[in-house]
Length: 99
Image (cartoon, rainbow, N blue to C red; front, side, top):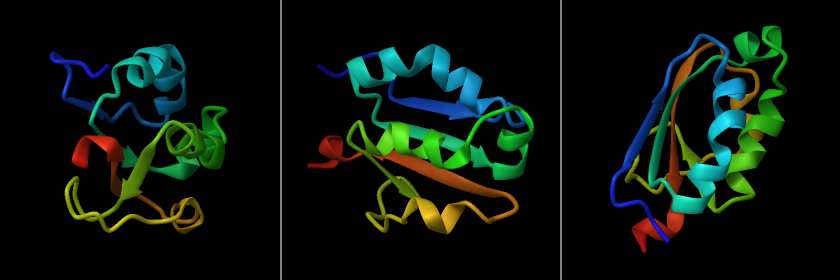
């Protein structure tokens, strides 16, 4: 089942992305929200009590891929590449949506 109402989620909550996703992951997974855009700052996640690697693994474990290019580039990156960056925009794409 995919949502006909939610096509994009944008998160820029200064390190509280972990808490935001914790509260909404069931809906994201249930409706396979196709695109998620996050201003990625691992250090802020850590300061707010979220493990950045575990945060990204939640998405990968549910059929999502991560890109630093754009939503449709299909140029995905590995979680390890994103753990030591200072600040970057990341695009999380539900890959079955693109098939």
